[in-house]
Amino acid sequence: MHSSVSAERRPPSRRGTPPAYFRAALPANGKRLPGKSEFGLLLSLPKGVARVGCTAEILEVGKRYEDGRMDILTVGRAPFRVVELFTEDPLLEGHVDYLEDRETPANARVQRELVELFEACHTLIFDDYPKNLESASTDEFSYLVAATLPMDLLWKQQILELRSEADRQERLVAYLREWAPHLQKAEATRQRAGGNGHGLN
Image (cartoon, rainbow, N blue to C red; front, top):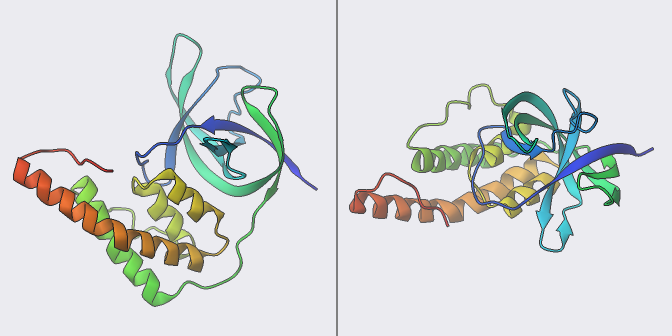
């Protein structure tokens, strides 16, 4: 049996999001606004949308705009794969299958390296040590890393599509190993220039 879910088209972006949370905008249509129920988010691609997405639960309704749109604060819940997509409405709807992880334990060495890389990248980007490590679940640590750091959304999509925590952590380690030297170079350039911002390419 397939579940039904509505999904917002979310444009690609290179900016990051707060830990485990992301911002979205939806039409202020009373019957469409999910309230506290879950709805789906799919990454918008040049030729359509990704077929693997994540449900989100609305935690807070923020700024409301004159044209009826609003900002909402949400938390990601469950990954899914689109089985059938209906595109008649601006707000996509479709049938989905929810995805379960394979029970493959994470490699302790890889996890330690991921923690170290995460701490280093977080400090370089935000000028601050990550404060959400102690409460992080070891079974979902990859999601915390991917949600916190301003990684390219296509990389985040790859992480979302992997079906074991071990695979996600290994993929993140490979990505952060490559990314960290670029961040260090950007930080050195910023300090020489006396700047305050972080330019991420």
